[in-house]
Image (cartoon, rainbow, N blue to C red; front, side, top):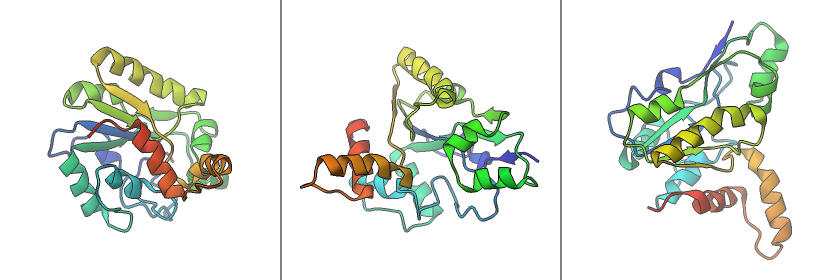
Length: 208
């Protein structure tokens, strides 16, 4: 039994009722295990600061304690579309405990290394069909081969098309590694994880 994206119906931007200027690209949000609490993209807010950081870039208050209708309204207001690189993990089997455990941890490394057959969102096709998009961001540093192979063609197309394409520090709790290094180097200017992610994103985000 394959594992489709939990919000597969949103990945191709067909439900948008506005013309996006910014596209945010993540990795994958599994439809199982059933314990996945996300109600929309980046919705596991107990360990993800996306909905805290993104509104603050626009000078607005954190939305981390809000619900999807509020998140969607914010995106519409600022013409932001969200998608993910992977639409389906075809060789995932919910009846295999190891597969269940790999996906339960929401690990990008496990997604890339523990499964062999993935279906991908056609990001370049989305950019072509939505010429209003002038900024595209991946919420991950594409350091590993698997993710580079997905992201680098998008960067190449963006350069050719005059689109600003950048990677961002993960908004998940895994960013604490980089935060720890920063705090170690700046003992007199300690910073919490949410503020550290915000700082890093602000350095990369387009001018508003």
